[in-house]
Image (cartoon, rainbow, N blue to C red; front, top):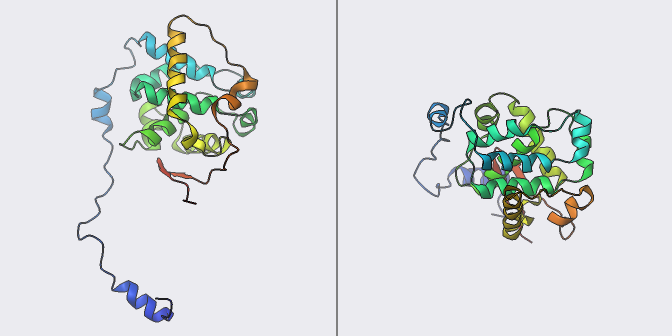
Length: 226
């Protein structure tokens, strides 16, 4: 191949046989109607567990983000997001770890509605951990019911991943388990407060190697091998 001319190389590629004779199936379309019938309606009672999970996610949003936006995320809104999305507790905990890893400089990248921050963290966590893909359109229109646009959600996902240097692989199982315990502690009546100066250092060590992963359309492309 190295000795071929450009014309010979083009001819060679044109005659390459596919690895499989099976066609590549198109992406499955998300059925919002069926999904909505399987979730609770807006008038239903939200469980106490969901409310506490939502409160944890809101509390992990950096305080200076809230000051720039002029308000804090609304726990009731985040609880409705959780009720519609129905993510496993581990995915909620992973999303909380993403929020816990944010640095104080993150506030400079966002000034809009703070509710989109936990929503984007959940979308990232679900896309990273779950086998079935959920698009940004699903989260923006299905879960958030149009409160945010797809473009705003994509921008927030990029801001979150950029701030933690795409370090999703550095969120360990132990971190997720620890976050679950913290959420259970909140459920048991603990009034744990989160110190802003300890947030990033406690969750992720970003210095051992710099991330080079890519996140596109809900799919995480791994970092290149050494």
